[in-house]
Structure formats: C-alpha cells, structure tokens
Image 1 (cartoon, rainbow, N blue to C red):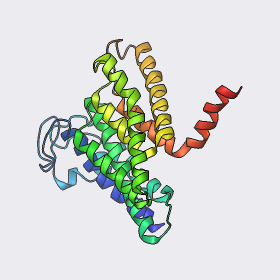
Image 2 (image 1 turned 90 degrees about the horizontal axis):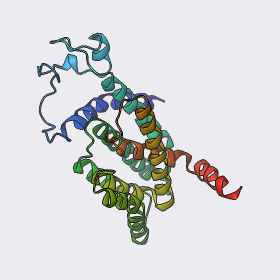
Image 3 (image 1 turned 45 degrees about the horizontal axis):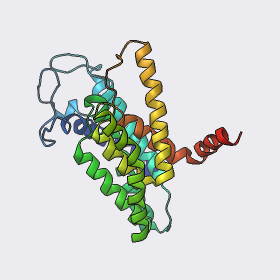
Image 4 (image 1 turned 60 degrees about the horizontal axis):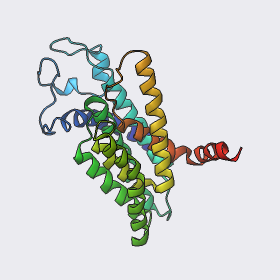
Amino acid sequence: MLILFYLFILGLFLGSFFNVLSDRLPQEQSILGRSHCDFCKKNLTVLDLIPVYSFLSLKGRCRYCHKKLSYFYPLVEILTGCLFVIAWITTPIVIPTAVNLLAARIITIGLFSVLLTIFMADVKYHLIPDSLQFVFLVLALCYHLVQAASWLMLGSFIVSGILVMLPILILYLITRGRGMGFGDVKLAFVIGFLLGTIPGWIALYIGFIAGSVVGVALLITKKKKLKSQIAFGPFLIIGIVLSVFYQTEIIRVWQSFFIY
C-alpha cells in the first residue's frame, strides 16, 4: 500500500508538470523556462507550485495579481495521482516476471500520462502536438515489446493502426480538415497500433458517440454554434480508456443490437 501512496504523490507533482506541457507545447514554447502567472506573468516560487496545497492555501488566486486561477490545475494534479495508482494496479502482463511487470507498469503510467496531456492540450488549444504523438507511439511500441510481441505481431499492429485510422482519414479528406483535424488522424493510427483493430474501432465508436452527445448538448445550451469546432481528441481518449477497461461488456452490448 505504501508504494501506491508514493505513486499518488508522484502523480500530483508530475500532474503539475503535465499542466505546463499542455500549455507550452501547443504554443511551441520552451518547457525549460520557469513557471509564471498567466495573467501578470510574474515568475512563481516553489511555494506557489506545491500541487493542490498552493492552490488551496491561496484560495485559487495568484499570489501577486490576485486573479482567479482555473480549477483545472488542481483537478489535473489529483487525476494524475489517481491514474498512476490505477495504472500500477491494473497493468496486465503476458510473461509475469518481476522485471517485465515493473517495466509494463512504468510504460502504462507513461501512456496514461501522455494521453492526459494530449487531452488537456486539445481541450485548451484544439491542437495535438506532434511531440506528444511521437511519445505516445514510442510508448505503445515499448508496451508491445515488454508484452513479448513478435515482429509478425508488430506488423499486425501496424495494419491495425492503418485500419483504425482509415475512417478518420476519409472524414478528414471529405471535409477538407473542417470536420476532423489531421492530429486526430495521427492519433487514430496510434490508437489502432496500441489496442488492435477491434478495440481500436470500439474506441473510435465511443469517441464519435460521446462527441455527438456533447456537441448536441452544447448546441442546445447555445454554448457552441453549428459551425463551431469541437476538439475530437479528448473523446478519442475517453474511447481508449473505456475500450481498455470495458471492452468485453461493450462488445456484448454492441452484438445485442444485431442478434435481437
């Protein structure tokens, strides 16, 4: 249990870093500079950057200009801590040696981390940085290698990536990039490469359903107009998570529509 506590604390601190990545990478800013307030641009000190605690102690305001800060930041920190714990507990392994299990857990934590950062970047800026896509692909490859995938299996995962990407690519070409960004096309490929064809299609299906429901809700509440763009990447990521954890149940429900 102690390892889970340490993982949660590590997730809190790295979640703060992921917040920085999701802001700077889409704007092509350096990730090495000091953190600063988005409003007054004042450089932040260590006391301003303690995950969750700093936000609560400052009552959600900047120490210097007293502008209200987004609740997004502490929520992401807490979510990252929870994801680290979940990844550690639920990571499956084909060859259950101690080394393989540890490697698989670390890679799974990395996958969760990059997906969360992509989610935030796309929500904020409607952009998925290529650097995050590349890290996602490399981690997916490492995951397959740890799970003892052969070269033939890796080839089949590449085919799966193409098959999962194809519907998004067709939509992108038909709408000339207005209905779907090319970042979503690349993300769909990596989803297929990581999950395989059927789970990848399930992730797409869930993403389309979730996106449609949210889009209609935003139109009804007049928070978006008919021609407004809605980031699709976050819905794909929701699809990934649900496909991974509830794949069997989703397939059973999907089949029931065709059997009866």
